[in-house]
Amino acid sequence: MAQKRSIFEEVATTEKQSTPVSGGLIEKGGKGARRGIRLWLMVLFALVMLMIAVGGLTRLTDSGLSITEWKPVTGALPPMSHEAWQTEFEKYQQIPEYQLQNEGMSLSEFQSIYWWEWGHRQLGRVIGLVWALGFAGFALARKVPAGWHSRLLLIGALGGLQGAIGWWMVSSGLEGEMLDVASYRLATHLGLAFVILGFIAWYVFLLGRTEAELMQARRSGDAKLFGMSTGMLHFAFLQILLGALVAGIDAGRGYTDWPLMGGQVLPPDPFELTPLWRNFFENAATVQFMHRMAGYLLFAFGVAVWLKGRKSANRTTAGAFNLMGAVLFLQVVLGIVTVLKGAPLALGLAHQVGAVALFVLILRARFMSRYAPQQSVREGL
Image 1 (cartoon, rainbow, N blue to C red):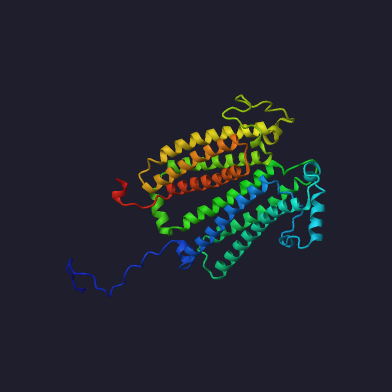
Image 2 (cartoon, helix red, strand yellow):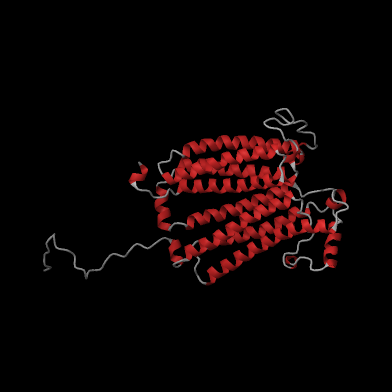
């Protein structure tokens, strides 16, 4: 007969212990993988931000059509002799931008715009190389966490697509009577750059915590605030696309009064082009008007989101929305000053960089609303 035991008798240490709970899927990828991949993605993030800024300068200096061919490999080398430079210049002289706008340009003037576009394309090659080497290194070392191969491959695929869209954009300005690239293609190119930047930023945020911490944080997230910030993120993305249309046709330099346009609420001749749809892409007055109106609406909605976010019981989340609101206000002010000054190079670039900062801060606030960071009871009081 089995011997009875006291209810107060402790279980012997020799008895089988329960199996410890294993970590989430992402921890199974190996120690250090999260930190290493996060640092690699942060480098990519910085490079993409730089790429957006250089792309803006390329557009603002009218340099984007200076290279008339797409050579992903051999195009990495610039002209190395006077004869090679002359050959490139002769190719540029065959396109409408030179014939209708820059006729008589000297070789040295051509070289100044050529270097901007070459630098823009070269930076794209560097980004592709950094992604390829990083992904291959982590994959071969088997350090990619479970479930993350597809995410990291997505970034590479979008980067490859971006290169193809970049040439699709440039090719639109090489024939007909186009003096610049098609504005809707420019908007597509810039929009995809922000999509890539957004994915990288979101992955950096995710990798900043363990899988267990993310699961714990999600339980205390604010679903309504997450939904509002998601709506604001989409609205900001639309405004960025409208800004690209403005830049594509230099619409920011057409009307330099504010809050009116040409002395009236609705600018003169907003629908003078035919067919009607062309006005929303090619009419400088209409395009700038759309950008202004969308900016007002985004600001109003952003204030509502900020008022909701600043009341969050989580201080880190509230701080994220406060920072987002401050940058939103500064971006609106900067946009107004840029219009009043006729969109000079420095202000135009600053406004574009401000859009990047605002987009990322909205994304960060959105992340905090879904994955609320832990705080002590004292901090919540």
